[in-house]
Length: 177
Image (tube, rainbow, N blue to C red; front, side, top):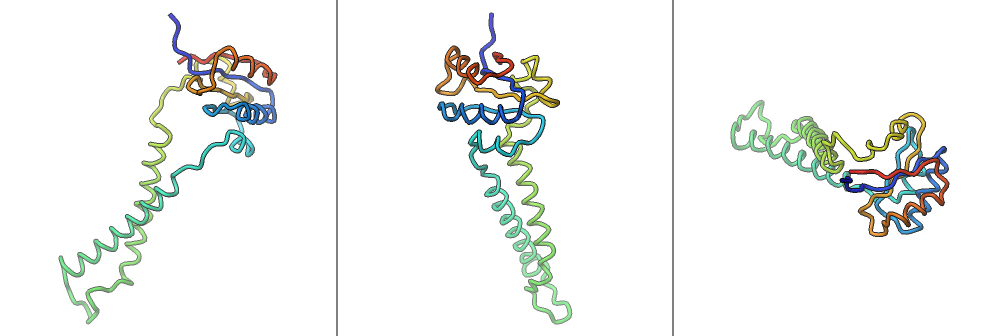
């Protein structure tokens, strides 16, 4: 009984070969793919055509919510709950509200960032199918890996394997779920 297939993984010797493989796969029409490298490769992000993340919009919304919550809380405290006139100042003394409003803005933005990242990254994920490939252990040291997922509409086991072999990798492996 075989496990379902997650995709095909190719191992390359250099970062340039990995970037070239990503560009060639995108030109071939593959869209569900990922690359793994032991070091950051600036061109890899562009070669994979990764869409922009919605994270900044969520962080802005969280920050604005924190600002509104901070200012609203302080307005409620000073005008409704405890309306004390100290030193002849008006009840709505907004300059004194700025530090707490700023702190709540930063707090809400930070918490929104954490929660959104966890959701967007699909965490917690203690296991990923690529760890089933024995050679993937070298991905954090000296391996450059490229995986085309079986969920891709253009994925066909035989044709995708032939395509990956045409890129001259050092190894092509099937990744089981």
